[in-house]
Amino acid sequence: MPINLFKGEIIYKNASNVVTIPTKLSLSYFIGIGYSEKELENIQDFYLVAEGCFFAAVLLIGFPGLLAYRVTLTKEK
Image 1 (cartoon, helix red, strand yellow):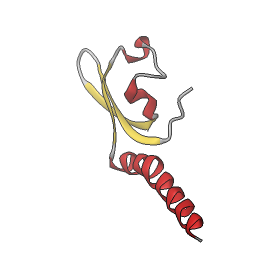
Image 2 (cartoon, rainbow, N blue to C red; image 1 turned 180 degrees about the vertical axis):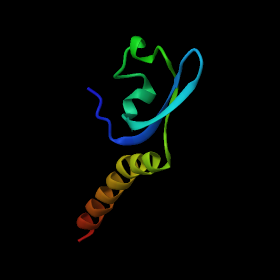
Image 3 (cartoon, rainbow, N blue to C red; image 1 turned 90 degrees about the vertical axis):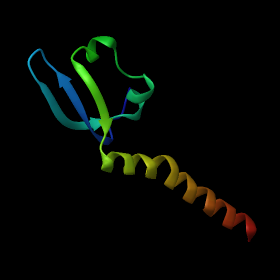
């Protein structure tokens, strides 16, 4: 079950036009988990905007880094 936390955009392609819709996305969509092929029928592309990339970096690198730093400082005492 994907959790949509990160701001992104989905580009829908119809027969006559292309529509960009801002929405929240899950990182599991980018590795191919959490959606079916039927859901992607009219979708041309989807991506994270700058704010979504920043939030993903904070959650994937920032918080674990701060936790590791705190554990390292605690072990030194």
